[in-house]
Image (cartoon, rainbow over all chains, first blue to last red; front, side):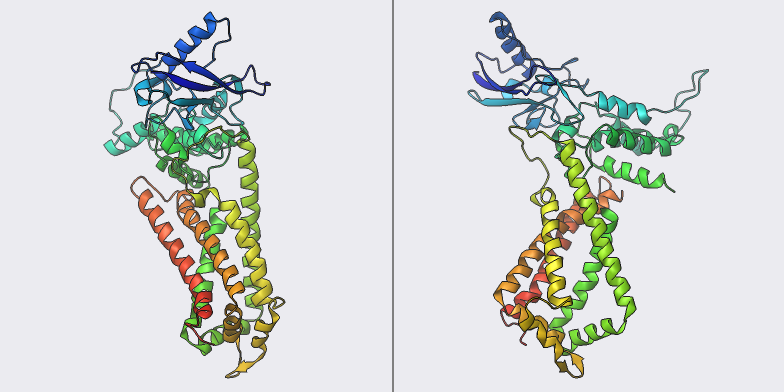
Length: 245
Length: 211
């Protein structure tokens, strides 16, 4: 396959940045998107040019590090797929591909496609935990949890914190991320103790970090590589209202 | 937004019920208008409360828009719309159209300072009551006035088609099973409000209801 890439290049946080066009020649359709970028970078390095900086870690779709908007969609057009698991067979030969970083005030660009997502860590630190007993290991299943509650919590816990929801949101709101983190604990007995403080603190941290407000566009749900549902946003709103009772 | 929005939906529901009385003859709306006016201070308290609701709703709406544009200052070279709708994206604009319309509507039917030829009909008594019916009818016989009202009600339809389902979500009343139904009912209700309000000027413009 031969492709034309238009990649966002930005030397540093203060640089203005612009889209730069690169040819990607003889690309195997079995490559992942990041492997294709690796090959383009090899060529750039050989030419003595600065390679394209992009975030990645596990490349198995579970770490939430890769963060590129491909042709106007966070993680590209394949549903429920991170960009590291997006394969080149999903593109047509000769295609033009525009690659941009997540754009949000809370995610300052560090270089090229790399953004600083530590704002999400701040939101987690504000309340994304449960207190537990120290001492002996409790028996497994000593606390019975109905299957549908466990499933609900696990579905919320599927969030890998990649930030695609924020990148997709017209308001750069982190509501889907925060709601998933609030919901995974809110429904479990272990999460009840801190439920009130958690929802208030995490929501406050979300706004303090410069994320926008949710106006229910639901772009986040469509962009999420883990299919996190906006029902968790309703759960967060419920938890928020409950915290005042 | 959701709390004030919900209260304003309650207001437009009651307002619509009153207005639809134009379809039940000259006396129906005239009796309704006379009853309202006979309430005296209560009607003024109600009016002030509604204006306050509008003011809070508009202030929050503008604040939300400013905060959200500041959270998202850069635009992508390419951005695909995945799930959102034109109605959701244009809430601030449809809201501002409704605000301008509201001022015009108050100047027209409440303060009576615009379209004075048509609204002067209210000075005449029919069966001992001010003739609100003819005031409305004469106004809407003008294509210009009717078109203004129809455009404003289209904006109201768009605003409600996002707003109605949005407040259910914001109140946390949604879940995975109800989402699609809530969205569909919200849109259907918005169509109902839009068509019902538009029916009034068009009925007079096309002489379906005659003055």
